[in-house]
Image 1 (tube, rainbow, N blue to C red):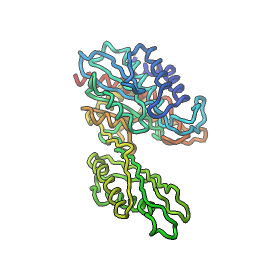
Image 2 (tube, helix red, strand yellow):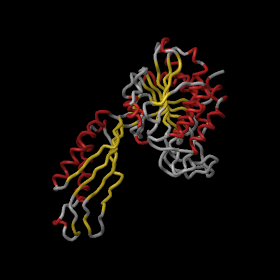
Image 3 (cartoon, rainbow, N blue to C red):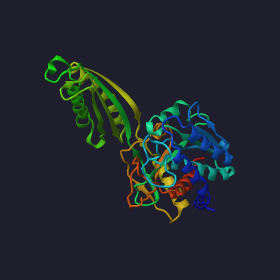
Image 4 (cartoon, helix red, strand yellow):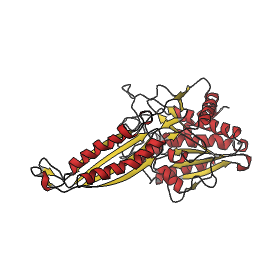
Amino acid sequence: MSYLERARAIFDDVVQVRRKIHQNPEVAFELPETVKTVQAKLDEYGIAYQRLGDTYALVGTLGDPGKGKTILLRADMDALPMKEKSDHDFVSKNDNAHLCGHDMHAAVLLAALKLLKDDEDKLEGQIKFLFQPAEETLNGGKLMLENGILNDPAPDAGMALHMWPTAKEVGLLIPKKEVLASALNFKITVKGKGAHGAMPYSGIDPVFVGAQIVINANGIIARELPSNKGASLSMGSFNSIGGAVNIIPDTVEILGTSRSLYSESAKHMSERLPQVVDYTAKTFRAEADYVAMADVPALTNTEPFSELVKAAAEEALGSEYPVEYVDANLASEDYAHIASQLPQSCYYFVGCPLPDAEGKIYPLHNPKVLFNEEAIILGSASMAAAAVKWLEENK
């Protein structure tokens, strides 16, 4: 049987895992029940694993390292701290929700590992796998590196995927090179001196200073980055703590993010933004604290690996599902922490559109988003086939 046929044969089994995780979502770094669910299925499949350090991450290996190289397969498992508003039989039981499809990703990796375990004696090398927490914080991948995911054994390549519910149809979408943008998420606290709104000269106005910081920071993009290697900068929250119609507060808090597909531009933003914040505040007698809450590099595929994944997927899926190249976008993914340290990597998307009762399709992170579970079959079949093909062609 082909990988597609075998993935279909185990679909009913792994989809129940997906639905259990979906009903009991956990967020960030603390995923005890999610990990138990994944562990139970790995035990059933006879796949050995261990916790990665003291984190809620699971790692393990299949195959024989004496036969060839090692490829890492990774899935994230965490949900979002948002309330689900969709209507189906396995809706979230708490105030968190799998609105980014990480429950689907965990099911895909479980299914792929089952397929590979059944062929373990035929593998021309070794499969290493990772079930990861805290992707949504954009710091989970960094934590995996700190806990040695690239050691014992060191992978020679890595692969991961993501659900894409707004795709036009169920199928695979593979970026050839650039995949997703860097993400610099930050918090700026401007400290001034409160005063009556009628007498601003008696204080130091952090609202005014904060506004100047927003304007000056955007000057980095307009005047310091090449137009063909740009970045985005957005301030999503500007909160004057304690202010009122006639009260100048002591403090303002600004939250924002910068994204770029270009590593040099991302590095420039991470260096220059805190400088502009500091100098602007000092210009107007205020103080400013800048904190980078996450700093993720851009995610880039190794082009020959992308071509291999596409060829393997086309062979595995036949003419039943489209396999296409797709352009990059400015979303971000903390697998980039890991991918940036690997000799080769490929990250791709699985189209999984599922209209609601009114025929509407919602994007990722929307409380009404739905995922077509058929994508688990495509994801697992393509991941297993591509891993086998990579090991065969990179001995």
